[in-house]
Image (cartoon, rainbow, N blue to C red; front, side, top):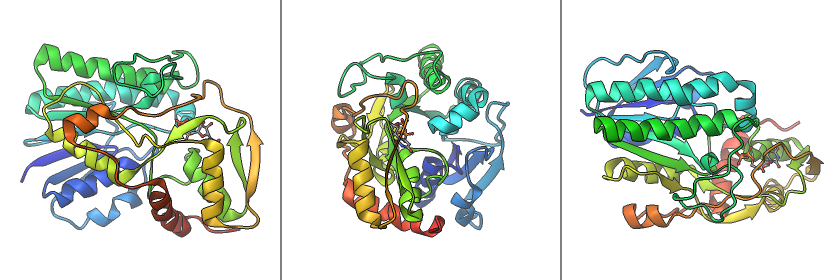
Amino acid sequence: MKKVLITGAAGFIGSHLCDRFIKEGYHVIGMDNLITGNIKNIEHLFPLENFEYYHHDVSKFVHVPGELEYILHFASPASPIDYLKMPIQTLKVGSLGTHNLLGLAKSKNARVLIASTSEVYGDPLVHPQREDYWGNVNPIGPRGVYDEAKRFQEAITMAYHTYHGLETRIVRIFNTYGPRMRVEDGRVLPAFFSQAIRGEGLTVFGEGDQTRSFCYVDDLVEGIYRLLLSDYHLPVNMGNPSEITIMQFAQEILALVNNPKAHIIYNPLPIDDPKQRKPDITKAKELLGWTPKVDRAEGLIRTYEYFKKVVSPN
Ligand code: UDP
């Protein structure tokens, strides 16, 4: 049975990847230090013989016995609130952690897929964002710890590819949502769903005219799986190009939850909050035949089912 190491296994995307690789018949080693992950996301896999959990911080030396086919590096604080609270860990997991995993891959002759992000484009001056856009990032702003760690991660991954001939894959992930997002992670969807369910104010930052494009997690996982198995080593955007303002998004969640006490309130816009974001996914379409299948109406219904279980109304 082929072995795959998934870091950030107890996180939102990492746990869905564990499920997928188990379903595909792999032996999965899930690694996490649980600083933002939740063990409940993978508990259902514990009884399986082809699943192992390693509690470990990948910014320290990573040891895995035996052979490894693939490594998927998904460990990192990933919401703006988390990386503000944990700036040093965020920098370390993207830099030292990536270095350790590339070294492990080299020693095992394994293929590595690295989770990069639309944040490498910063507050983009080009719209929609294509992979050949270099971005507009403030290195010393509050998001710099995440954005620059991910940019370094891409650079060192490319260096291992060109210098050592390592098999590498880089996915630039745009806003993704679905079950298992952490209720308190501060990101817009968990914030709006929990506020709507509790009958509180939905905290729209700024005027709510900034845009995002939200991809359902199953679509993302399918794209990542295809990219891993492809022979393409340059970065590939993955996300759903359906763009929406944050105000429209709040309205959609208000309508879905339909709690008469819920309403909209305005909070200040965070520093360096990107004004617009939408992936150009031409490359993923052409290379992998991949496009998102779950539209927002359907994805939000599925996600609401999850938040109903984990958020109790006031
Ligand atoms: N946002 C908001 N209210 C919230 C949380 C976020 O209006 O309670 C806005 C935020 O300013 C940003 C967008 O929603 O423009 C997406 O924020 P998120 O933290 O989910 O991720 P980002 O895309 O900024 O990394």
